[in-house]
Amino acid sequence: MRKKLPGFAAAFTRLDPGQRAQVISDRPGPYFTRFLAELLGPESAYSYRMAESLTRFAVLPCAPYLGLPELGPLLQAWTDNGQSLMASEMPQNAVVLYQSTAHLRPLDAPLWRNFVERVRNVVPVDEPYYRYTQLAAALGM
Image (cartoon, rainbow, N blue to C red; front, side, top):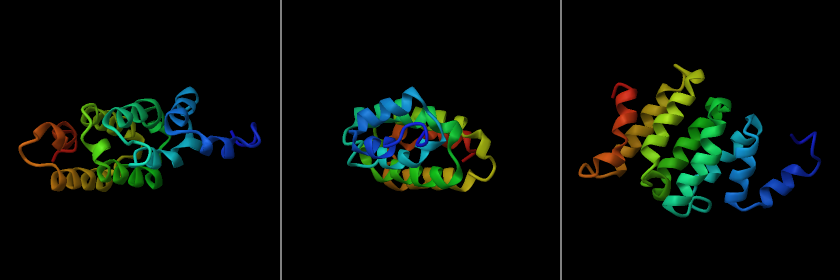
């Protein structure tokens, strides 16, 4: 991507989060995986709906290109930002992400287990939907 479009990297980083997600959505690939964790952080995913949109248009389309070095920080950003963690679409999005990163099995298992454990430490027991129970079941937890 950078070789085809000189100046692309600088221009991309100047875009707002929604615009970055749209660019990624138009042409998902390995180049963009380095930006995904930042997109789920509090500065980009500043609301529940924004977290869902960024996940739908950037994170999930890039899932097949993720490696372990990108997955760990992405899952950490997801749990660190309450807007990402507690948005209504995010528990199902986590299941889709897990299914879409099957190419990382079994080496990704500790990252996913840590993700679910962090969720369980943050989300109250009386909020079962936001405890990512479907993902935990898929992990055998």
